[in-house]
Image (cartoon, rainbow, N blue to C red; front, top):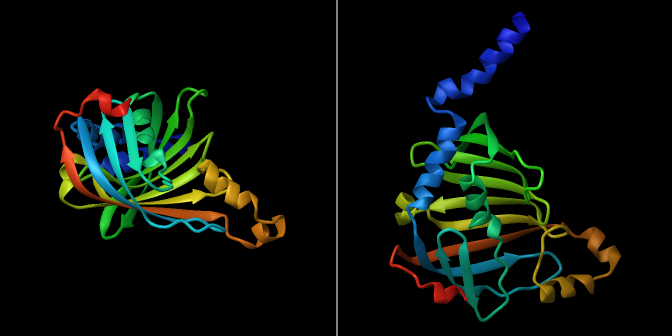
Length: 225
């Protein structure tokens, strides 16, 4: 009985220390993101993928609630959706269980690490870990494990658009073996011998700098056709 009471107390500590439940922390993040009905933003994309060379690429990203998303670019674009729409859509459905795990300092910001587990086994996302800044109600970091792309870790940096929960910089860490790359990029990797692949780190990064946001101007649905 003593052990049960102690376990129950320890489970309550994270909630008591922040004054909010993990559900409330996640809900505040989603509420801020949902205030953005649409946006257009310029993106500079730099991919560092083992065994291939990809030049920095300029793109324009369009988004409209709830899940319209489009990227216009003349070059090869590697743009993980986990950090843009996939996590937001998953969290908005509220079909999950969330637990506060720990407090973590990220760049001088005290965050709360929350594990989010879907209730449905048929969900594409298996597990999401979110490092949430409770003061600004934004994600400073996320780690999403999905059935299709393995685990993708995203680090967020904010500037003028933090009031909308929109970052100025995103750094994705991907597992090259599991992540779905564009066919042309995947073809280049397949040309590399198995011996060479064994010698190379399978972790890659994609850095995206976001500038010139235009928010809530009423994007037409025709843009996404």
